[in-house]
Length: 190
Image 1 (cartoon, rainbow, N blue to C red):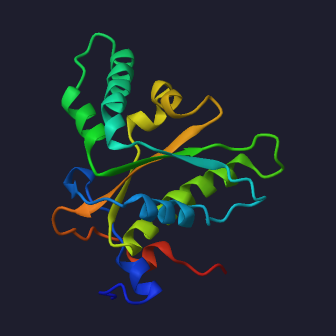
Image 2 (cartoon, helix red, strand yellow; image 1 turned 60 degrees about the vertical axis):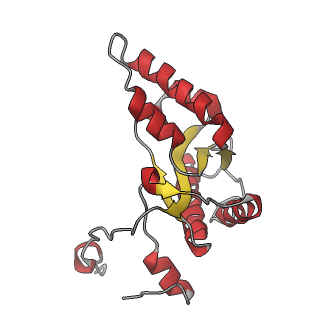
């Protein structure tokens, strides 16, 4: 349908996720990352609560993340072998890693569910901004997203990890994935 990034609509319709393990340098520089995160902050936010925040994990802290993952894996699967290779790949892949935390304001009149949806929208805006700057991004969750030990490395008990966002340059051509058929997901309310 759209094959270039020359218009906003074609930009949005050509964004797709890349595999973090296939991302290569360069990632966004400091100014580009600031732009990407600033675009993320323009997400709809009922009540102007900013019920989310970002933690950038620089390359020199990836070994520490790998240790946190190993500790969490060891506790969760006591007695089992820790998958060192999987933890290493999760922690070390892609030039840029951002942890997005959902931090709902509990005493607000805005339902927590709306605040959590805003955190998800932040993740999507970040991926769109990365794409607009010529990078590829990916939003991963998985077991580490729901592990309290991993969460505590970045935040507190009133927060949840909304996702690990990986950004870099594509190391190979991105493949299009199957998309839902329009008529299967769109209906007219009668």
